[in-house]
Image: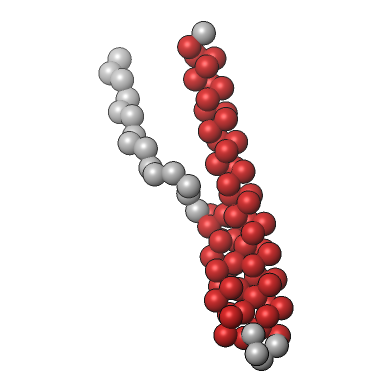
Length: 79
């Protein structure tokens, strides 16, 4: 029974990580669009550039980033 509980926890953990990355991608797109919209007007340009860059970094982290630290490699068992 312990194997099933561990598998369920792993699935839940991976689903949570996927959800965080999906939220980062969507939020990044929203911030990029808002930054472009603010950048169109000269008055909001100083605010629009950092907002757009933040959106770009959030979008890239959502696609390529890791949300957990690296785990130590398990050495192979001798046979």
